[in-house]
Each structure stands twice: as C-alpha cells, then as structure tokens.
Image (cartoon, rainbow, N blue to C red; front, side, top):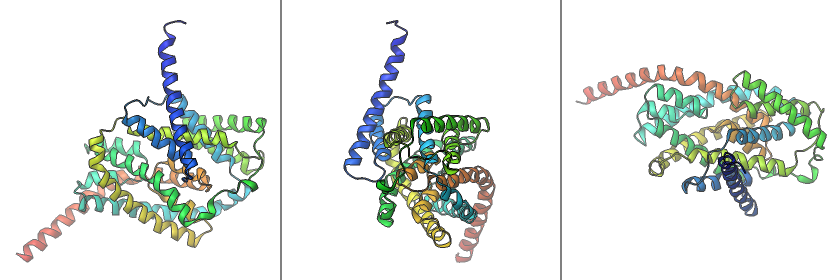
Length: 365
C-alpha cells in the first residue's frame, strides 16, 4: 500500500467511527422510545466524542451527503394535498415576522436584565438562527463572539432535545401510522429523486441560498413527489442514516467550545431559550387557531433554531417539513435584514432609556 494513502485511510476510519458511535446513540434512543431518536441520539453521542476530544472534523462531502439525503427525504414526503396547503402560508409568514421581532426583543431584555449581558451582545445572542451570518456581523461590531456562539449553540442543542417531548405531549397524534404509509420508492424512483436533488442543490448553491444542498434537494424532490410524478416513501434505513449524520453535524459544533465557558453560559442559554420558546409557542398557538396548520408544525417552524436542525426534526416527528423549511428560510432572510437594522435602532433605544432614568433619578433626588 502506498504510504500517501495512509492519512486518507485514517481520516476515513475516523469518520466511520464517529458515524458508527452516533448511530449507536440513535439506536439506543430508539430503544428507549425517545422522540426523534436517530437525530437526538446521534447528536448526544457526537457531543460526548467532542468532550473526549476524539471527534474528527466532519468532512465536507459527508456533510453534503447528509444534507442531500435529509432534503430528499423531506421532499419525498410531500403530497398534492401538502402543496394545496401553501395558500395558508402568507398569514403564517406574516405572524412569523412579528414573532421574530417579539422574540429578539424579549430575549435581549432578559439577557440584559437577568443575566447582566451588554445590550449589543444580548441582541446578537437572541437572533433566532442564521448563526454564521450573525457571528460575522458580531465580529465586525467587536462583540463577544465566543460567548454569543456558545449561547446560540446550546440553545439549539436544548431545542432539539426538548421540542420532541413537548410536541409528543401536546399532540400525540403526530406519530406516523406506518401501516397507512405509502409503498417504498423503487430503485429507479429513488435514483430519479437523487438526481433531481443533486441538480436542485447545485442550482441553489450558484444562487448562494442558505443551506443550498438541503433546500435544493427538498424543493426538487418535493416538486416531483407533490406533482405525483414520483410516488413512494424513502426507505426508513436511508432516512435514519440521514438523521444520524445530521445529528453528527449538529454535535460537531461543540468541538471547539471550552467546557468552562459552556458551564458559565448554560444558565444564560436556558433563559434565552425559555423566553424564545414561550413566545414562539404563543404565536404557534395563534397560527393553529387562524389556519389549518397543526400546532406541532408551527412550533418547530417558529422555534429559534437552525434551518437544518429544525427541518430535519420536523421530518423525524412526522410533521410537515416543507412548511417548516419555508418558514426557517424566510426567517433566515429576515434575520439578515433585521440584525443590521436593529443595530441602528438599539443605540437610540438605549440612549432614550438612559435619559429617562437620569430624569427619574434627578426627580427622586
């Protein structure tokens, strides 16, 4: 064997080891009947590997394969009835915009008043998703990037862990009835969806859309499935493998985190997550009241998490991944607009409050 192959083989073995451990975690969670087992179990197992300093960096081709399979599985779950429900999205999207503003404002206040954060850092940490874009802006504004990143990552981790149980408790009917599920895709149909997903991912990547492989695969396969051109369910083993690799992808975010900082930021993350999830829950209940969208789909769509994690979580829970994906994509765009705009508004608000406090102090004196 040529010596130059040895590093490549070691890297491949490390990837296989990580995925195998993650799959074992998913299998264990499934045996315990924990909701979304392959996703959350794989995520926990990968975090443990990170804590032990033995988790390798996930290679880009493997990450892209995970996004491709997850997006394909989401798109294949689309039906003509799902596409017909698109008419109810405008109201839901409008409520999402209001929810995002309320969520960021409330979380910023909570982190500032309860946890003692600087207002600007609290504002960045409260952004619901779009982590990469937020951190780039935060770094440019000389904010505490490390602290912001840790709070955002822990919040996503907690959401993936607690949301399935909350939804299962509130809406136990969301469990998928396998006996009524459509037949499995034929090898030819699966190959057609795979090809369409690759083309869709490449197209969105050229357009620089966020999460292009995931969203492109979902849109391309969703059009084929929703139109009835391709009918069938993705084999459960394929879906489970995609969930496991997405769990690895999420867990990987803990690779470079100092555990002492994680412990310090955990209470702040819980405060931010509790405030954000409470507001998202209230708006989700409103969406369920005024439209035909189930509460479970709405809460995952409105929850302050990343687009990849939340859309895959929706699929694993038997919810509508297209509805969830569309809303998280819309929120990603809204965050890109609102964060720079909010940075202009924030100093004015703080200055006004400061003058008000000074006036109150002089009157009381």
